[in-house]
Image 1 (tube, rainbow over the protein chains, first blue to last red):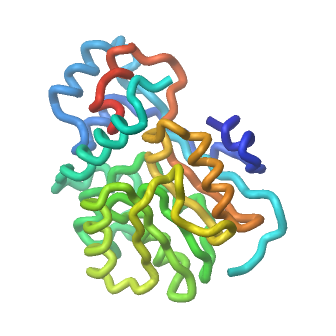
Image 2: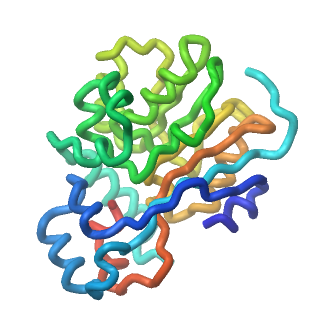
Length: 69
Length: 188
């Protein structure tokens, strides 16, 4: 993902926050049904239930002198 | 690699987000401070569907123009509008009309006059070149089947020296194929 930022010309690309995102976090979201969460529990190995993916925040800057509106 | 075409992905995402309902605050309470949530409408709080807090890392200044990509029901757009003040502006962009309508209601409920909402795609931003100071986004870039195109569009609409603060989910280890093929996983 960071490489894609560089590829389109951003600079100072940095991950400023990062935390694991597991089934417990997903269960907070109304986007996911109980059936889907059960499906995930079934197909994901148990050691990964707490960190299925990672939530990150990336900051970056477009090159050039800052101008005002 | 995506198992869905661009059209399929958009259809799944529009349907999922257009129909979502929530009375809970678990997502919002995990991401935002009590002080922040106290100055937002209840509907924006219960429909917080992001995965991080991009506004916290955006270093917004009064008078800036901020674009929130995939604004949903508006929680980050409203926080950004409050941060940049009446001399600034927060533009919320979303491809789901139902979400934009909710964001519009939420902005009106707290009387923010510096919020502008637009329907559009992150891969084809309906904004002029070099027209915004900061772009934020929360759990949205991963929904795009053309992420590099979306990033190029961000670079186009940012002014020189402009910033992005993007919260998203990333995979550090391959997920089972059954998950990657699941429409429910795509929409989340």
